[in-house]
Length: 420
Image (cartoon, rainbow, N blue to C red; front, side):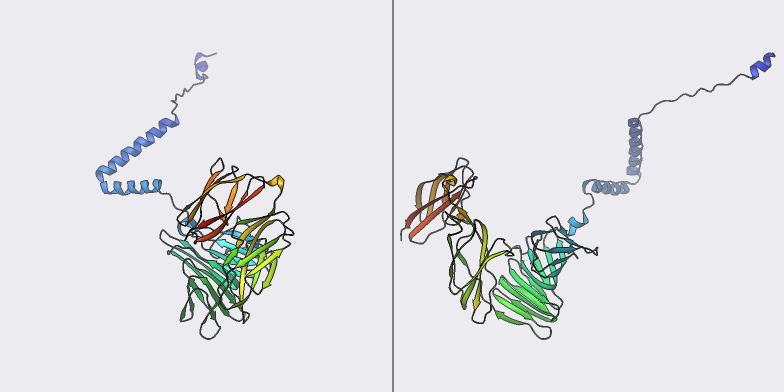
């Protein structure tokens, strides 16, 4: 074979050489290039450099705020009873409300005949949506110096309690009127879309009612009627009774709760000729246990099972007009048995002017109530000290009731005399 032919058939080889570069090296190289660019900009255009640096620093230090957190606060249900539904502003469906539901501006809330709901805003203003009511969340805004809340009543009734801060603004509106309720106030607002009439009653604080070009101020225990045509009429209303006994959060210990008689007492209201005592198993008074009409300011009720109860009173005048319900008090009724007894000893009492100091010892972890007031200062070993409110001169009965973690109870009673 020809040697030249043999050489022409040889396969040529190509050798390739490379150098591995790590990601770290690439990153360092990019940073060096960026540094050179920024240095060049700094020396050639120092003002541009300062502007870019400020923008980068702001972007890193303060990310874009949440739109909801910037101008609005969360609205949640804090009490629910019966049928309560919500329709979102961007939805066509009604869904059942629960304690995880977060409301927003434009949402609708509807209660059934057995429904009741309390919604709370961040500033502690709360609105109670009464049965057979339809409302719209109209405003929910919060800035660094003030908050504004508002609901619109399409039909029904809303009770509200406003925050104490002077920078809190709360309102309730209907088709033909708006009520601006001032801080630290309580009000009840009704709207009837058929008659286009409204009503607002103030039981604490004050409000301004606007109806067309008319503006009326109403104060504590006053009511404003807003007609379809005509001017607003203002009148005084009965004050709700002040409750006396049983004291709020008081435990009532008895051998047999079912046969025991529970004594209720409240202070008289001017112009009232009778009262309605209401006892409920819920603080929203949707599950009424008893409703007793009495001519005086006391009532004794028996037949209650052991458990927790809430009670309030409504005053009635000669024209059958009623007050708003009083503040609700809670009491607990439970049985006393030997197996349930707990340790409770009174080691001493001492007068400091008109204030009595009471000291003693109970079981660790137990709860005590002295004359209806809870004892907050109980040491880990059960020792406690309690100072009463200023007492009037004369003889006073001190009642101490306790309950331990096992459900056991104890009761101590003694008398002290405050000199004149």
